[in-house]
Length: 548
Image (cartoon, rainbow, N blue to C red; front, side):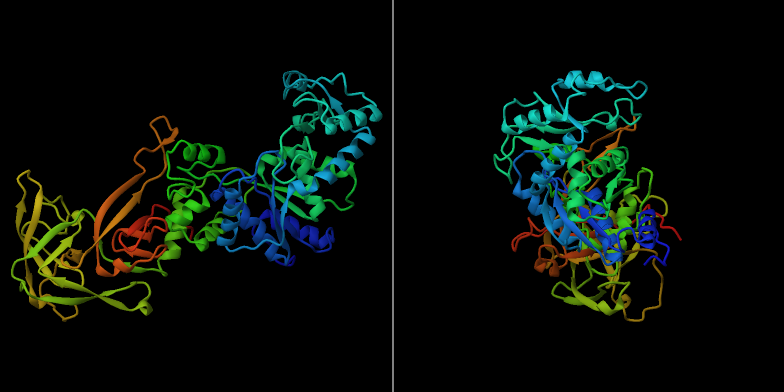
């Protein structure tokens, strides 16, 4: 692999490591989520990057749960994470828990104490902030900093024995209170928490901090390249310091940072997303408007489209914001050659073809996918009464409107030319139905070469139409006039629509292109034999312009 120039800087670093023999040509990565919520599209980028990087070099990837906080594990989150990883098309080498390594982490802390590189402090959080200094001013040393290793070890053992209350003592690394990197100013590496842990029970009342635990976890597992998002760049010196000074691992892993994913009109924070769920502002973590992988799956996105998106955006060293239209382009591009079309009319208007025989019904032919002739054709019924889409009629047409209006003639796709002769209204002035005439000589496929029409509209047969519930989505967050992202109160619109008869057999999770509307999926939770509910996956029109 090292002979080929990689298309991202992480692979270039790995190529250099392999060329130098740093890890003997081995590449071992990990995906380390904290199971405190559902994963979102930003995590999908990390999943794809870690797993595909290992695959490229014939390596392996672990799934490791970051559970160093003594909080009860929620099995729902664990199950959802594993479902997401598998759905994206990946399989981990080992499923591990950070808490499995608590004994080794404790030994590592003791090793630092013995070397005079850690001490037990009794400063309060407020005092610690005061002593820490600022970006422009160095910190001040704690009165406990010059503690002897023997004294520090005795206090640390008392911490473990439960002799102190929460927050009464911490174990801090002794590094440099004048460091320009505040993360290196004697950071806390252990804190007290008298809380039962989901995995280790009440064995521990002291728990390692993430910045101390993370490098040790990587080293224990033999991870070669610890791929993190950019906010950990300033923590890398501490990552390296821990491994170097603990000294248990002669060939420690290397941390590499990449820019996290930011999308327009999208919240990328598990905390904020959890707030939406807890406050009942969405249906749940898998609400089709949510940027969670579960939400995107229920929305109808394919794993291929998300993997393609992650590959398309690449890996950058600097943060930027990607237009969400690019993600939509990827799913649209993936679906266009995969799904069949179906006729569905929104805001239906009944059309009565007055000169069509009342007792006649015929089948007309439709292509299943205009891009893929191999998908063949289907037949749908046509008779005297049909429904057309509300957008396909205007009583007073605007300029360059070529669809149906009084006196105008259009082609009904797959069937005939029809001409609007009369608009029948209800007492309140709304349209009740349209009376039209048709020309029997203009049947599609008949070879008719007479007059031309500029507009073509689609239809469903009124006698056999299937009532379906359609949920059209807008972005969950939109910019207000001040440029702030605010919750969109109108992010979902439900409509009762009419579809062609075959949609009565639609199965949960089945995708279609609703002709001229967009791509839809039969909702996995709400679709039943009695009612078909369809979620908009993505519209047909795109504002995204792919690079040539």
